[in-house]
Image (spheres, rainbow, N blue to C red):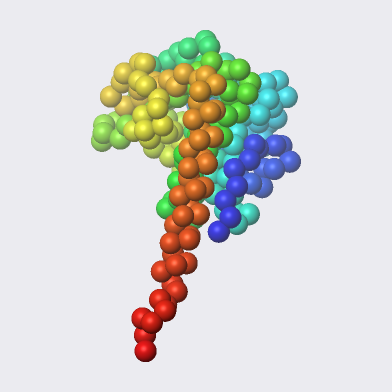
Length: 229
């Protein structure tokens, strides 16, 4: 199987899953969704938001494909371009940070480490653009109600659990909690050139381990001389 992670372009919307193309959990203010009363096209609104951010700020998503099928995506943008960013109990996002809004892995890639690859791609892009930090509103599932954040969303299957990033995953990726909350902590990852160097080393080690595993597998498949008579 062949996995690729690339920067999303407006001409590459077919690289997004159906949910990612229609989800405007972050891109529309819940009040605007309620006022629209269902008379709007979420896919149009998502493409309009992407177009606005790309034209005014630059690339804002990394997308993954597995054998040319949509496998995952990660979206990010300056917080002033994300309508929902000011609605959390741990808002606002720091002025020097870009907001990582959502990361989605599709079912066909759930057994892969694609989440790590998407985060690495986001970090590499933002380091090249001299961004100082990434922040994200994490999600912790604790069985309580979700009344802290307005719940009106563009797609019926959208929800904090579906459209936010698990706080535990973010912590595993090196993010640190800067605004604690039982459900929606805000986390931060400082960026510097060391990140890019470390990711390059990690990627090289991953490739070496994969090649070593293939070599060992190939050797084990061979019948040793004199083993069978």
